[in-house]
Image (cartoon, rainbow, N blue to C red; front, side, top):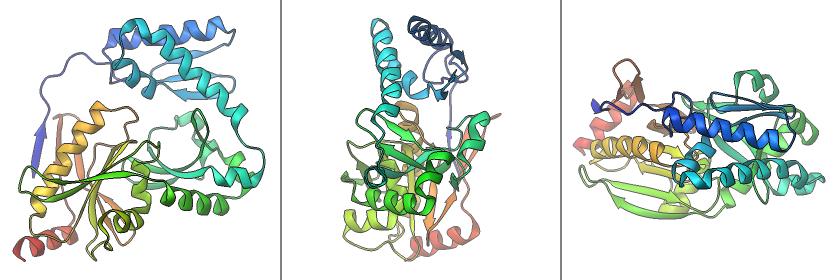
Length: 304
């Protein structure tokens, strides 16, 4: 079922899609000037900044700049890179301290540049568009751990600690009535950088939010940006409305908020996540294509 076709869009930058081409070029020049001013050699291309200490992504910075006046951009650039520089200084040294601030985190599957991917071989694919990473929640930033750091502590120890910390991370939520057919949607928000990452512990999240276990048929969810997670347990007849409403929410929130993750709709079922969204770049269209097993569930629920 096709539910969205984008209209002709302004001339946005192909890499920093939150900005027009002129705005993106201006931001890249500000980044070059910042590094030149502190005596650091940096190459700025596309959405990445390459320096001796590694490569960082400009996507989130572009989102913050989009929301600010142009005169504020130099300060945003300085604050952004000061926080990145402070990550190394604030990283705890003891293993117990590291485990206390370790988190599992959802990241976009293109968040790590191809040239850096060999240093992050432990990352696990979740579904199309999403990867599972390990991060440290530091005072001023979130640091994604590379293979070398993970090896020092141990992958399974970090994953276990990261999962426990993610489950314990507090969130807020609202129960929404979907506009299409009045289906029940749960909107999860919070002040932490790991709100959308709660999709990695959806069973525990649903239990805390709804007071019930997830139904045997699972749940639909979308994690459009780091600050938002929306889900719908598959337990009521108005499920077609939930499909359309969640798909529409995913597109809107993904395009309007910092920390974008994925505009796709997913199905969680017995611990496995399946992508339901097809994106046709040539036609500039999105459609939902459930697998046969899910289609059977949707028909049964609709007829119940």
